[in-house]
Length: 150
Image (cartoon, rainbow, N blue to C red):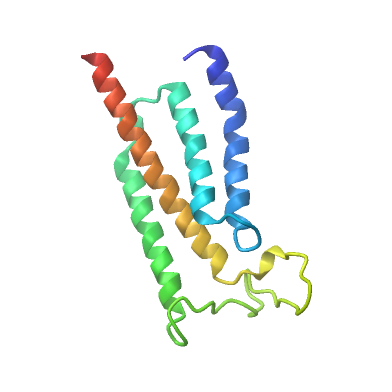
């Protein structure tokens, strides 16, 4: 790729990742969440990998597969953790712990610390989606390298 493409990718990569994290962490308050934020972060990764022509050996699918598996286990673990009441029970809501601030009745300005288990589930989904998309991008890079070498 040209130096301009690499420079623009280097410049925008941190902003794309931060925007993806913003979408993930505000998913319980605004439209968005784990899938959308993970897709945005994966697009930033794809932009960086393609602009740098990262070799396929540097993109280990095993690492992304492990992250994907662990994030699915994390999601299922949070879903099962509330089984004392019901599956997917939001046991951290109104608990006073992390993301468990009490929500007042009436109009709410959208306090970030009120999601309970939902932000953790959004993080798990974002990790799964970003790692799955990274695997797809690394396969596309492998295919393009294979076609160029022939």
